[in-house]
View 1 (cartoon, rainbow, N blue to C red):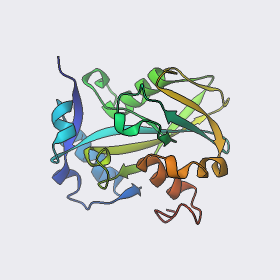
View 2: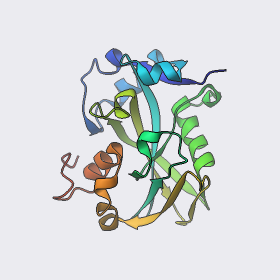
View 3: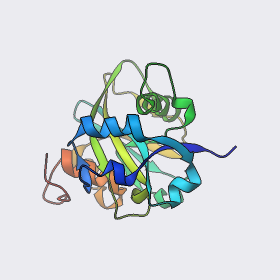
View 4: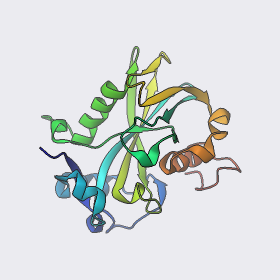
Length: 204
């Protein structure tokens, strides 16, 4: 059976105004569009059709002042992201993320954590914004729902070590990797850790 992913029509998503990069604007309207207008479509169609945006939970994992930073290896599925550095973990929303009394993007968030990383001890998650990039081939098909996850112990391990490697870094260490970052991570880093050399967006 072909994989299906949760997507929303682009024209409906951006009827309140489009944006490029990271945004905290209009969460009530956007989440309402998710709830009322999103549906599952074949992933192949979603990747190729400009009419849809796939909804992607994007997880920023932190411990105190450190940021969990990953490098995507060649075994990772999306070839366009090979060897790219990321400060976010994310994935598509599938039908298995439909759970009673849970939003599918929140269920997918929990699943992504369980599948990609092992966070020792307690953690908490909060929504912090959205990501959109219509200037790259990967970004055009996706729309990020960004959550910040605070790890209380600071012990986080990559589970799929053949696909990714990762560790906690301070923001100045992450900045040195800026040119190797995927676009979403560049936008997110620029918005949250604004410096003169990462000025893609103004600090919100």
